[in-house]
Image 1 (cartoon, rainbow, N blue to C red):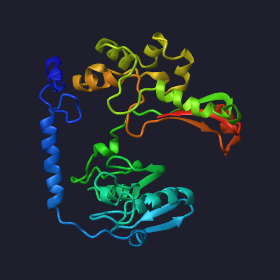
Image 2 (image 1 turned 180 degrees about the horizontal axis):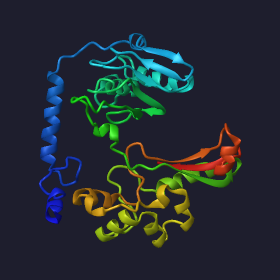
Image 3 (image 1 turned 45 degrees about the vertical axis):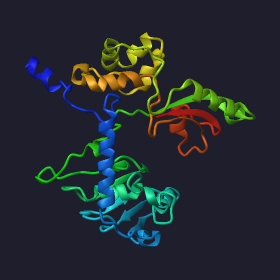
Image 4 (image 1 turned 90 degrees about the horizontal axis):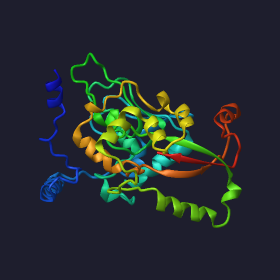
Length: 308
């Protein structure tokens, strides 16, 4: 059994197109083939924004429905749970990808969240509706915030990696401070932003400052925050504010492939790329004073730092 498990995770025969080792000529050839397929595909006339919006209906103060037919093969509607302010942003995103918008020529590389939610409604076996939560925005495959259920009794039902999440291990943290907006007046804000850009590695290809061997990475995967505390990279009380106290008892690094570890090793200590960010935020409005006080962010004007 042990030998079979090792074979299962021997990924030396696979080619990872996103890896640095992927031959450049193979990548170029693949891109040229994809471009040729796009050119050969018949072009369909794009709908105007007015035509697009005929498929969007407000069914309550906080719920909008995208009707079947918005994209081909929809089996159920898509329902978007947002208020009017967030709906305005979604419509603007859609407007930008119509024939007169700034992304009109880039429809294959940028797909608005409303269309992504509708695409999910076209997947085999989907039940009732494709739902999008209030944090909805354009993602990969599924839009961010997209939720869908599939009928397990339907032999055509799918399990989509895009639905499980390419970024399934992303974490979001809010760091509270005792600073106020007044403390960031003058040129302090600009200096702080510059310092963050200098100190936090971010973007494709950037490497972190944390020196870590493969053995260290295995310990990190198994021990989580405990490893970071030991290395002086976290405070002991950080455990109290993390899911499962910052480590999963059942974690087993042997189930992670060598190729995945190789890619992750270089990015340890970076912010990452894509939609990741470190953002200085201000408490602008308090909706539930008791909840805000419990989390220590109950004062309007308080400075917080959000990390994704």
